[in-house]
Amino acid sequence: MPISASPAAPLVPPRVLTVAGSDSGGGAGIQADLKTMLAHGVHGMSVITAVTAQNSLGVQGAWELPVEAVRAQYRSVVDDIGVQAVKTGMLASAALVETVAALLAATDAPVVVDPVGVSKHGDPLLAAEALDSVRQKLLPVATVATPNLDEVAQLTGVTVTDESGMRRAAGEILGYGPRWVVIKGGHLPGEPVDLLTDGTEEHWLRAPRHDNRHTHGTGCTLASAIACGLARGQDVPTAVRAAKEYVTGAIAAGFPLGAGIGPVDHGWRL
Ligand SMILES: Nc1ncnc2c1ncn2[C@@H]1O[C@H](COP(=O)(O)OP(=O)(O)OP(=O)(O)O)[C@@H](O)[C@H]1O
Ligand SMILES: Cc1ncc(COP(=O)(O)O)c(N)n1
Image (tube, rainbow, N blue to C red):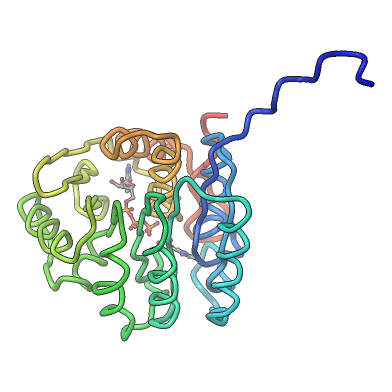
């Protein structure tokens, strides 16, 4: 017999899944995603697609996992625990892009696709022959796609040098089927401006540029933070604005590690 009333049911945080590569240096990929999720008070989960040997100087090695290992991780998480949002990052190969896209086509959860192509140091993280699978299979299942300007060029052939180019690139990416796109203008000179649009609404997100070279993992961090907002039920513009504020603060607090580009500080608000 209980001697006191049963305690209130424990609060269960929203659950967010990242499908991405591991960065042994802890600055980008799965590690950045899970840290971002912790900082947003959600329960982070992972499907690892590839393992990289990586540090502040670059990527020294990369090994993709078999398709069955990726599918099995996804099923384990989704069939038991469930997800309120998914973020994808490094998918390495056409086979993995197509496997992940097929799994995500069957989910009701919002999906943030960061179409990772190369690392900050220029190391390839996606096979060139996978680009068509990203265009035809992955972008169509995205609630929000978040390409940087190099990824825009790879996917659309558009070279962006100014804000009108960002608008043109957004139209091209939306043509592949994501509901929203964030064109990240962090690589343009001047204030880092991102364009969020669904083809009807247009939101220009501006922030001060932090002259900090320790920016490893910015793209992963932005996309994961968007997924966290969506998992909490925010609409896309609200989630993207909040994510932009979070990544801006994380860049301002980025710190030196190793001899090269250090990570942003995911815990800057904690
Ligand atoms: N120096 C900076 N100061 C402030 N914000 C920045 C800076 N550099 C990039 N950003 C912002 O960080 C976010 C990520 O943009 P970025 O263009 O760096 O993505 P990315 O290239 O995909 O990142 P990564 O190189 O990690 O893959 C965007 O919101 C962008 O505007
Ligand atoms: C596993 C993995 N995923 C993504 C990135 C991109 O991040 P960055 O462009 O900051 O190197 C990375 N370097 N490694």
